[in-house]
Image (cartoon, rainbow, N blue to C red; front, side, top):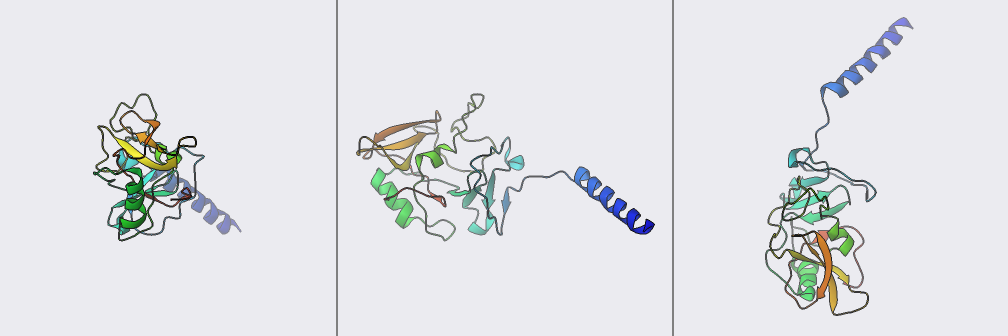
Length: 191
């Protein structure tokens, strides 16, 4: 009995020392299974890319997609650098886009797209996305991105996010605007 008690005590001490000696580091790239829980109720702080627990670049998707652990969504790592009308942006995401050799992309809802905005007033970066983000090519000037969300009152308008200032607004669906496609989540109907 004394030996088993000493063994248990040693195991507890080793577990405590292991937790103290090796602090957790955020995994920012990786292959494999992710199974992110939907976590819209939590805020994962990002200060630098190396210490950001929120975003994971998916290496088994040729590093062309990013898992957002805060929302459970998968985003294009490099959104479009050409502009589309709202209808053409829908077509681009839903039918022609292949990221990581996968289809199944769509325009995000306004809430999903706005979740990428860093609303911290201390962040004056342009574009207004979290400092530790792994995204590339996000437009900073006239940085409007379409959402799939139409205006509830005027059918010719849709919601966009302006990543230059971090605000959301409605504009006409015929205006030329960038698209940032996403996978997962609920989306909107019809698309």
